Image (cartoon, rainbow, N blue to C red; front, side, top):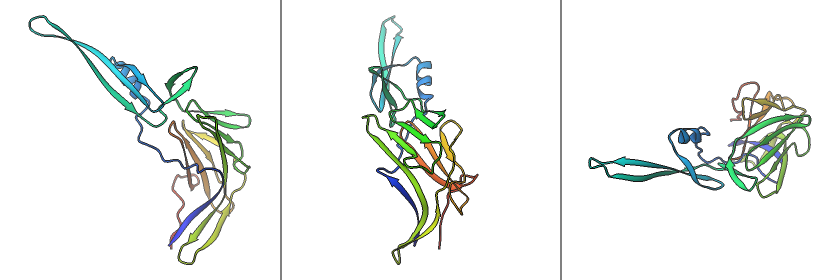
Length: 202
């Protein structure tokens, strides 16, 4: 069996697994229904609503309805309080910044540079890395075969949460795409310009 291998330099793996998330509009729907936040943390919010019911004898009963919203990276710490994360990509003279989440991400203008992707975690720790090449490994004989190396490619914001480096490899029509979410960063290698993933088969 032959497996696609991506050589990557850095102290971390950018392809972070994502937990299921509620859409950002969840907060708006809860507020429209009369709920307000009564508890909050890094990955949750407690929504509560007080309702009044009157029976046939005129007795009023107060009832509290509540539910818990869960999502990885749901909130971020700002000015001594938790506020909801709102992932945002902003162009700068030196590249692109991902912000308004628990983690901050810096995308260099050119992916073909050392530490072209840097992530600052909520505890202040920095991680950085950059792709080097595409290769595949034949497990039956334990050898690797080189496909293509990274070359100069300049990042573009696509949609609201993607950074794409088009035509990023020598000899292969492939791009590098990063999806920036409140839960983390996902890296995808795909053909240019479509999003079909590059695969190697026997």
